[in-house]
Length: 244
Ligand SMILES: C[S@@+](CC[C@H](N)C(=O)[O-])C[C@H]1O[C@@H](n2cnc3c(N)ncnc32)[C@H](O)[C@@H]1O
Image: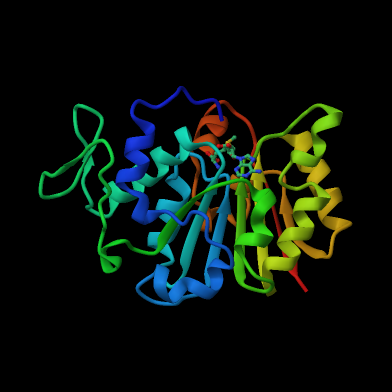
C-alpha cells in the first residue's frame, strides 16, 4: 500500500501504544495479560487501514484479534480508526491523539488505556516473516490475508503472503481445524495461490473467482482495497484452506 508519510506518526503511535504488542514473543501465552479475557485468537496479516479488523472484531466478539502490518504510516491509521470506533477519542486539529476527556497526547506521552476499555484487537507493527516468533505452534484459530501485494517480479515471489514459506508458517501456528482465508482482485496472484495452497500442508476446501456472487458473500466484510477494486469492475477471488 502506497501511503504518504503521516504527520506526527511516531507521536500518534506512542499515544496509542497500549493497543500495540511490540517486542513480545509467544504472544499466545500472554493473552491473559494482553486482553480482558482469554479467547481464541484470530490474526489478520497486512491489515492496511483497518476497516476489516474493526468490523470483524465487532461482528465476532468471542475472539481476540491481532492485526499485523509492516508499514507504520499505515497501521497508525488502522489503530486510530479502531480506537475511535470504540469511543476512545480522535485526532485533534493539530494531528495529535485526544482522549474522550479532551486530554491531548503530545511529544512522548502515552495513554495507558485501561485493559477493559481496549477491546479485543491489538496491533503489531511487523513483518509476517516473524510469525513463528510471535505465536507458538497450534495457537491461532484463523488467519486472514486480504489483497496482499502481488510482487509481480519473478525474483520477488517469495514475498507473496501465499508463497510456500509463508504457508508453512501458517501451518505451524494454526490450530488443527484452523483456517487460512485469502482474497485478492489479482487473478495471477490467485492462480499462483491456488497452486501453492494445494501443494502445502493446508487443505484447500473452497474457492471462487467471484466472491460477491458466491454463497460466501453474506458473510463477507469488505476491505478498503476490495471496495476500490470492485467499484472498478474487478471480480474478487477468494479461497479458504484448513489445517488438517
Ligand atoms: C495492498 S494492501 C491491502 C490492505 C488491506 N488488507 C485491504 O485489503 O484494504 C497490503 C498490505 O499488506 C501489508 N503487507 C504486505 N506484506 C506484508 C508482510 N510480509 N507483513 C506484514 N504486512 C504486510 C502492506 O504493507 C500493505 O499495507
